[in-house]
Image (cartoon, rainbow, N blue to C red):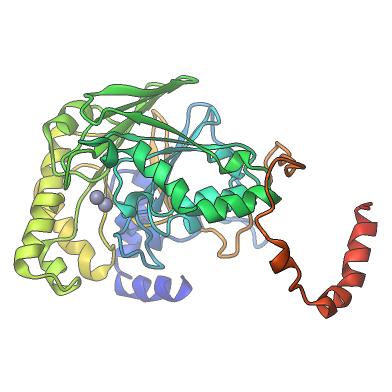
Amino acid sequence: MINKFWITAITVGLLASVFAAGWQLGQSDRQLVRNAHAAGGTVNKPTGAAPDRYVYYPGTEELAKDEIRLFACGTGLPAARRDQAATCWLVELGNGDKFLFDIGTGSMVNVAALMIPYDFLTKVFLSHLHTDHWGDLSTLWAGGWTAGRTGPLEIWGPSGATPEMGTKYAIEHFLKAYNWDMQTRNFKLNPAPGKITVHEFDYKGENQVVYQKNGVTIRSWPAIHAGDGPISYALEWEGMKIVIGGDTFPNKWYIKYAKNADVAIHETFLTPDSLVHWYGQSPGQALGVGTQIHTSPPAFGKVMSTIKPRHAIGYHFFNEEGTRWGIYDGVRSIYGGPLSLAADNMVWNITKEKIVERMAISPDQAWSVTGPTKPPAPPTSGVADPLSNIMKAGRWKPAEDAQRSLVDTFKKEYDMK
Ligand SMILES: [Zn+2]
Ligand SMILES: [Zn+2]
């Protein structure tokens, strides 16, 4: 991170002061925020701290009652890379609710770095079933199960043209595919957190309510992307609206229902030139992917200049020096309003008064933080031992002897028989 920071800082050195001014004004382009200084303002004494925070340190800020924190836990492409996982957004509300929108490949390392107790990360809304939008469900499912989640996951997602193309089918078969994982964990852990409840809804529904609880309404409408099934979401709470577009070519429903959004997220894909140059696609394929299956930067600009959100977020491209400015120029050729070109670990604090964007600074070696609910006890009966006597008989005795003192000391410490 440090190396990249400095290399980029030198490259865009002259822009840094312009950017810092932009942050304070709260209106300028945001994509350079990833190079922001940690803190600023006037430091009045040698032992004093800088008063302003330009980065977000997870776990250190309480949300206000009327505040939303939106976090980009994945903004890239199906071939996830260390700098950018595939699509994932976390919405945290001042009422305590948290929602994951998509959980693309690789995104859980960014979610984990927020050190949120897994018991608070049980609601997942899928926009569609491409792996770059749900490929890391296995990590949340099994990882959260071993790291403190005490109950099942709940997943919302669209139907498809046929039952086998819908979310219910996908999750049922996800659990079948991971049957060995589930059966072996069921014996040692409590089975409840390994269960998944699915809420499938009609992908053709227009602005339909798919979730309503605790003052939060989540709606869906159809998206046009690759095949029937994909949808977009809008979350409404406290008079604010966050739109999570998923993958889509610009469509009439987004134009209609994303209007008046406080934050409108919509894909803006790599330019066809970038797809040829960096991704090795043929010109024909690049044009098809970049302008028909996905949304090109000028098309994104047209969408945002039409719906006029308080803040627009473009994502779904590898965000780096070689790609960013072609996308930026394409968007800016049409749209001049508030804009973020998203990167992983970008965070937005949203209230009716202001929208502030920062980068999160989080640990590479994060542990899960314990929640208020104690983990349920392992089952004492009713679950078959998945390890046979033939296998048990192969245990090597000298290893048992070698660890005997460790086991005895531990048992004494925890008062175990
Ligand atoms: Zn997709
Ligand atoms: Zn995608």
